[in-house]
Image (cartoon, rainbow, N blue to C red):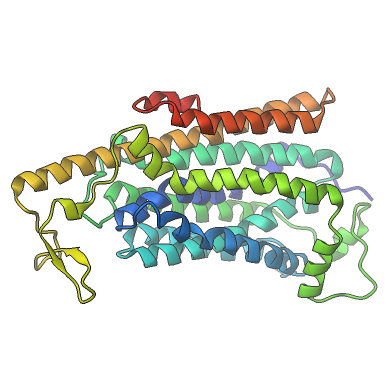
Length: 388
């Protein structure tokens, strides 16, 4: 028996939760390094502070995949329990992230956020295979791509829009994340949980018994294996073509991770000429118990500057940095929007025409590499980042 075809709104509703997931990923990718810099991390420390995020995905994804394949809740179903758990944890992490007072707190919340997003995201992709017949799966992924692209663009622009439209300040004392970023993360948390709830309340899952009746049902193994045995066995049986593609993906994600971690410090400095000012150059200083130079603070924990002129100079440089950071985040939203347009165009073209996937992939990687290189050659010209 074939799975029944679903209408557009059914597919839209089952994919809508991806809007929230992408809000979480986009805010993380466009703003996390800015938060680390604001809390006092230097550029060399930022990649190490980010390292927990991909490690969380590496560990969480296969575990959640296995657990969701073997879960059935009489009310929430197979995948929706994980949507809900991940959404709650992600929303909490998003809410508290910009209120971090120390770098280690932000790094810890980043670990929680990335792991929680993966708890929601992995079952979402599986839901397409669960709900849609083979003939509609590409359509389902197209709808997801549309929602992902819009979510990336909107979320990446949130800090800038909050500052420009709502006139919520993007300035703050040294070591404090601006209110505009706090509001943006609050909006992100609200959208995340709301979008997931839309999918949970509007989408009904097939029970294991119903899934077993369909033609594309997976045959149950004669002997059911444990989680670790199943996961290791899956890697062992990975086709050669997947291993080859894994090498290509390694280098692709190498580039993306470099962009997410270093785009803000690199571009604010190189393109906008507005690096994060080091408050220690403007403030009165003392030494801690280890002999390290630290800034002096008053009874209200405010930095004590050398004089009023230095305080004003720091404030002006920090304002320039925050404005540049808003624009960097906005520009990073463009890659989500353009990738959505390209993916949709490619999908509609291949519905009626054949292509050589390897050549298309190669050409895309070359163009992506040129986009990265181009950033180096446009100092002082932020508008040209649109081309990149």
